[in-house]
Amino acid sequence: QLACVLERCVESIKRHSSASQALKIIHRLFDTRADSAAGSVSSASLAREKLLDDIEARHGLLGLVLAETTDYHRRACDAAADVSRGPSADGAGAAETTCWSERVLVGRRVTHRAALTVGLEVAGFVAENCTSTTLKFEHISALWGRLIQNPLAPDEPNLLLAWLARVA
Image (cartoon, rainbow, N blue to C red; front, side):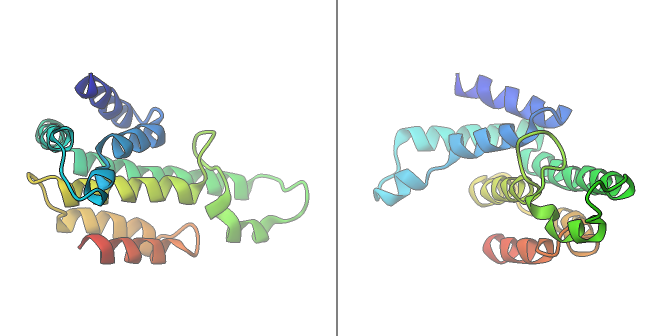
C-alpha cells in the first residue's frame, strides 16, 4: 500500500498536479527521525529506506523533486510578474515585491516560501537517506540559477545557502 501511495505522489509531481502536497506526503512517509530519536531502527524504517532506493532507481526521485522545485520557482516568478503588471487597486505596487515569500503564487494553498522549503526539505531528505543517489553539480547549479541569481524574494539566497550547508 505504501508503494502505491508513493507511485501516485511521483505521478503528481511529474504532472505538476498538487506537487507540494505530494512532496509533503513523501517526506512524512519516509521521515525516520522518530525511529532514530528512540535509539533504534525498526524493520518498518528499513523497509521504507529500501522503498526509497527503489523509487529513486525507477523514477530518479531526487532529480524529479529538484526539477519540480526549480520549475515551481519559474512559475512563481511568472505569476509574480503577472501580478506586478496588473493594475493595483490600492496603489501598493512596488511594495508588494518585498512580501512575495508570504503570498500564494502558484496553486491555492501554499505560500511561496513554504513551497520552496518543502521542495528543499524533500530533496535534502532523499539526498541524505537514499543510498543510490547523491546531490550532483547539475542539481545545485539549477537551484543556484533560480534562487541565487534570480530570486523572487530577498530571503531565497539565504534559504538555499542554509539548505546547502545542511546537505552538502
